[in-house]
Length: 289
Image (cartoon, rainbow, N blue to C red; front, top):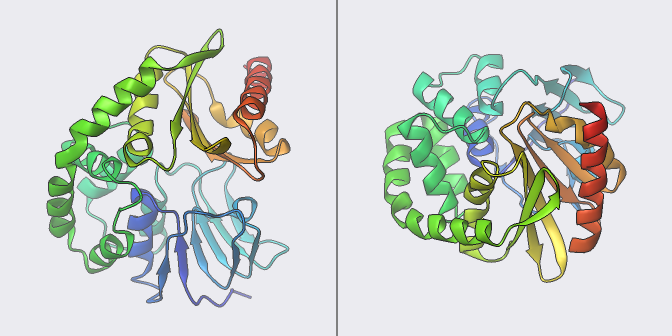
């Protein structure tokens, strides 16, 4: 039996927001973009890039995702219906194809490039810069509503205006990279303040810069003495998804693509603890290469 859907709960980045806007053409329901997931209880929702391991409880819902190593279709023991297709670069593309929704090719490509941090088009670069200038102030609801209505030109105009302060992000990114340290012989990391607008916004740019210097680059977002989240990236022929199993066993939720993986502690962890866990995860990765 298909779950009854009464809201859409989506990841808060460009891909999740665009995916939510597209899916709201099918489910004309309230949209939610939560940033703190680990204590969240979800039931009877359409969930975009939000899976059971990322929240406290997830039941009787539709789960649409592209993060993983194997496709998954059908129900689970919690009454959730899954649509998981890892071959897609972005969940918005998956949603558009699955429900046969209009999604301009230029925008499909741009969102995929942003989600994989592989910026080749000018539109992708504009979207990236607009989001990074103020990640917490991103107008999720308004952008999703414009996607629902197909107002792509309006979204682009907003993004072009928003990117004006991007130079501050670039400057902060350089500072973060300059403060980076070695974790292993092939891995470098930096920390940033997750509650600081400019450091938070610069963290993704900084990790892209750092992975040009190290085989594997790691960013770790801190709030006071506690690790909030992190990202692991590489431009080498290394499948980073292979470290998910180890991190998940150490009370993290980890997931992403072969070249970039995000992780979030499921309980409070110090920087020292997280660095040790990452070092062990990277050792496991080396054994599997």
